[in-house]
Image (cartoon, rainbow over all chains, first blue to last red; front, side, top):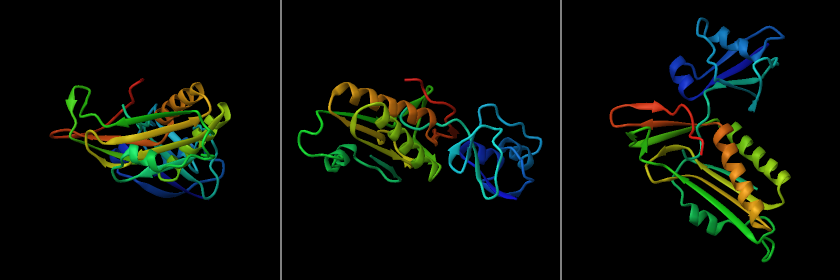
Length: 79
Length: 144
């Protein structure tokens, strides 16, 4: 099945990837997409993950057509 | 209950002047709490010339709507409004406006504080600061 993976902000710039379609077997957890897309790059401890625009845990199993996002800690509002 | 993401400068006071809260008949609310956050020209000891605010279109709006829904559940509120900037900002420009209408001040104060803290800790926005000769992504928010 196919999922769409997106990276935001500092992660997108560092990895040089904004978005990618990827073919994965059934039962793939969200966190595993990271190692499939950026092999050799350790998953940052503070990275946040979303599935279809909702926060999810790394172990969430992806489904066909999901939009998955990886992004750094958020820094909105005023400081 | 309104969420707005704007990619150009806005004046929070004129937004508030034009906004008609839900059930805005006179006498419906006795308290309005307003918070406005603006861009500073310094951070971590460095002068900041400008800033770029990135968001996740769709998820950001959903998340802000979700925390408004939660605030409406926790407190008795008449209405909530969140306006947040994205794109290029200059020092002094407003970044965020949170306004809460309620019958009584405690609910308005508490709910506006809740919305601001939830927004800062979980809503998908990212700041990139432009310094004199370099730029950097802000790594974490201040605690208060």
